[in-house]
Image (tube, rainbow, N blue to C red; front, side, top):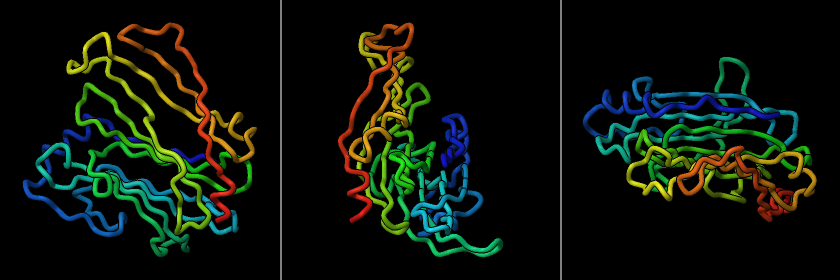
Length: 229
């Protein structure tokens, strides 16, 4: 099952930053406890990560931190919680606070849950934008296997999308636009020994690539071995 989280645009982010309180606000330890006034986007969906018949709650929260520095003005929080009957809240099993853990800007968070290799277990794909300019997109991605919903394991990370077509700080001859996506059919053909990415290049060296050029990239990771540890 593939679950895509609603994303947040730069215009909404900057509007939120303008309305942010002047002093830093410490965000709570649980993404579900972020105050409403700090929330930019909140999405909770369900997925059975370990194929045990009990769905977990997957959380993505984009929030204002209250910092006046645009590089620290927003946070992306991901979480996995135990499933619970309607009206109740299960225990938080795992969380990832991107700005706090990486020290780099984070907004426009997105989470996808999908069985990449066809073994019945669900992997997680996390992406977010590290750019603080409306003229630039700089999305980063991470792929996790989930041997236990409380212990997602990072198996790959790298650039997910880069778009510098309108970024005046980049010389025109070096401007680019590419996007990475998982080639799901090819990845399943690797039987858990690799993730196959499709990289689509729209602009390269400041020149529009028409039609866009697709390239395949193999990331050698042992999805099933990692999940079994």
